[in-house]
Length: 220
Image (tube, rainbow, N blue to C red; front, side, top):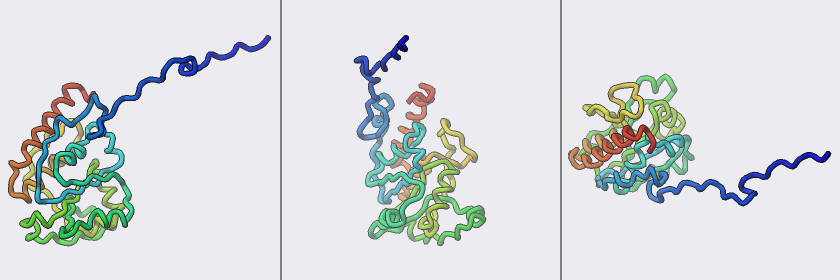
């Protein structure tokens, strides 16, 4: 007796495949979770370079995309191990000294990373001569990015101090002074520019985004 033929896939029987979710062309998020309404354009004399860990690109809890879309002239590049030629080009902004927004910890020496060069105090009084380099990722991911990219070892570092408590309650922090990428960067830019009020609209918009995320239980 001939075997009964298996039923054809639904698509082969004329049924259409499930529709793909539309994506916002600006924020690269699904249209239903678009974050563009929270963009608050701000300008700074400091140029901003955000190096984003690949696992953060599609993370709905991330803040780097909103930061990039809001800060005029900023650059956002995803990667973990960057090609030295590419990274050199990103850091070589004419007339600007790249400075890494990152603490200098004793653990760096244990990993074989050299001590970073000192940050000349006068640079902090000349925001138009600064390129602020920010690593976007969890503490563990950003630390690995630093370790794997020797060109970053040679940058002076800007540690943060006197930071306000984080409102980034949708991700777990391992220390009270660990802020989201957006919070830390806005604080640093406010310190360098000498005007924290300039970045308050963006900080408040981020707070609103977090409140909305919590309200919808993460379905953004």
